[in-house]
Length: 407
Image (cartoon, rainbow, N blue to C red; front, side, top):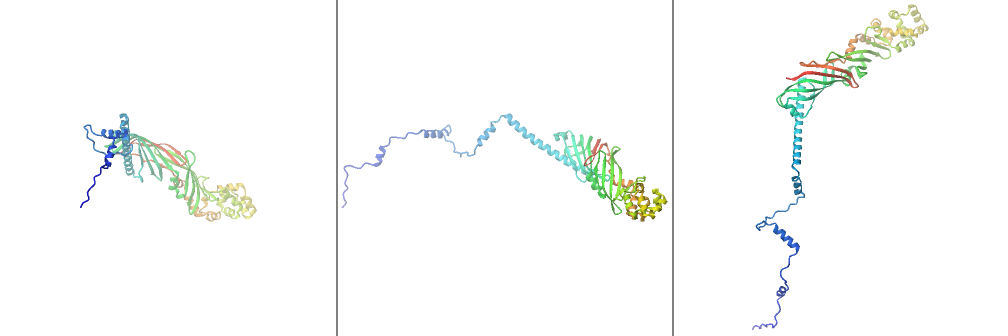
């Protein structure tokens, strides 16, 4: 049997109803919420529809840089564009110059049969404009190590002006006409020392037109000290001549050889060599025992006999200044073949004297010659304007006109 439910006389209030009773109505919107709402509504389209959502842009300053460039005046933009265009145009022009210089260097190397390609510098700007006009303002060509007779020219440098081209574009230049040019030819002492150095001779400048040669010359197994001077002068319009003078070969301190046939030339005792005769009795007696020598010295026969018999008289004779001068004037080359033993006693090798007798002035001068001549062109002319001896070599000014290169 169920227990009956009891109904309360005073029912409990519902808690939710109590909370609802405390509600004062909808909350008022704060200013911040109103701002957000207005911002959200402003992002919609005019017809009330909302735009599609897009991700935010996080790049810093992207829009700012675009705006800055877009805000530049048109004149500034034009200047910048022209500057860029000019830079690319100049770069292309310089590339064309380098290409043309390389082609010209290879062509000159082949046609002139040079060991190395020359240096070519094309002047004037812009180059392409000159090429279109088939002319060049100036071209400088430098050729190293050019063979010239017995020597090599260290450098040949020339600058041509107002060149007229026979060409159909950059890659089809058939030839050129050179109305005028000027340049330098350098013959360096370093090259001379190397090329003529078989005799171990060095060349140095001495004055405006003189070159001094010093060194040693091997003759019959003896290294003789060599001294000479070369006078540099122009020969004709294209040649350089050298006049060799002051040539002498020293055989130690005993004798000096000067090539030639004059009385002062030939083989002569040095002052020290003649002075040794007064101190060395054996040498003096060997010299005075040859009648031909005594006769050439002009010593009386009676005096010679007394000197050979008495050492005191010998010392008196050989120690006199007159005898020393006469001994120095004596040309020993004349006595080399007939009196080899006397020469040995004097300390001279007869084989050396035989070789010296064949070493004439022209032969020795040819060994020291610095002469050369510029080649004559098939068309036009080349001439030497000035010759000057400088510290590092011989410099020659050249000029020319009417030259044709190529066809």
